[in-house]
Image 1 (cartoon, protein in one colour):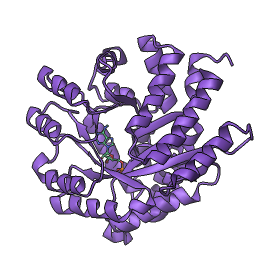
Image 2: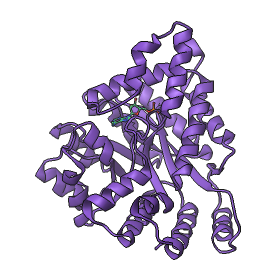
Image 3: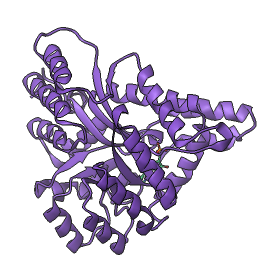
Amino acid sequence: MDLGMREWCHAIPKIELHAHLNGSIRDSTLLELAKGLGEKGVIVFEDVKHVIMKNGRSLPECFQLFDLYHILTTDHETVTRITKEVVEDFAAENVVYLELRTTPKKNEAKGMTKRSYMKAVIDGLRSVDTVDVAFINSSRENCLESAVSSSTHGKIERKRIFIRLLLSIDRRETTEAAMETIDLAREMKDFGVVGIDLSGNPVIGQWETFLPALKHAKDLGLPITIHCGEVPNRKEIQAMLDFFPQRMGHVCCLEDEEWRRLKSLKIPVEICLTSNVRTERVPSVEFHHFVDLYKAQHPLVLCTDDPGLFSTSLSNEYYLVAVTFGLNKGDMLQLARKAIEHVFADNGVKQYLTEIFEDAQRRLG
Ligand code: 6MZ
């Protein structure tokens, strides 16, 4: 098959490890929700319409926007709906494994607890009917059987996407609230929750506030990924490197010494190109630290961060890398495949994904 690079980046299987649920909502859904709340008098639709229809925006503006998103998505039904749509959108991009992260939220007015919020997310996963969603930790045998049947018997099968969940701690939260999230993650291990994320506005909150909860997660054997260095903060970046999480996101504002440590510790990095350019963390894709880490053969994974907020897709992130850095299809397929090493799911899922990529190599390599 002779596809152009953009079509080819869409066609190859991809693994998404850094996507926030509320940052992945479709514009059309946001507008519809805003209109509904406008009619009820909760918000003034005309005031928020232009905010949703986006263009370039700074990092502080993104967090203002998330506050708006969270007003639009406060009830269980809406959380279920956006989860369903986000999974469908990733599957349409040929994402075969998605680690979706979200911050469990409490909202007394809506009778929402962190647990009921997560139940609404799970309901969303269950309600997807256009693709097969595998989200409960499945046995190795089940995974292998499905991989083989879709790749070697040549049957026309429905698309299949593996979903695992990461529970995010928001940097605005207290130690107690963060602890609650860790306990919920432990409780939900059988419902596809595989790890913990620390995210939120990087200029808010202190590392010391989250550390007890992150240590608790580590003691429980829950893998952790941390948003690191979205703003310059040497003390915090060093403390995060000392903590030695399983993965880190962004790593934009590191000093030479910290780059050296990151590389020697070989902590895999979730690369969010468009997000970092849009929020002015890097001047352009060309000058993104991706290229230095890639040349150093540092473990990394291309991700979207917030495909809704930044109007991107995982296929587009792959395309940007290919055209900006001149990587060929062989390099790109290798890059996509290497993400398998960094997923938080079990070996059965990794084996399944390996088969998917071997099949893609035969068809598209
Ligand atoms: C830090 C981010 C982020 O959890 O409500 N979030 N945190 N840096 C970023 N880069 C731009 N993008 C998203 O999804 C939205 C939440 O994810 C975090 C923020 O806490 C945001 O409120 P959920 O599903």
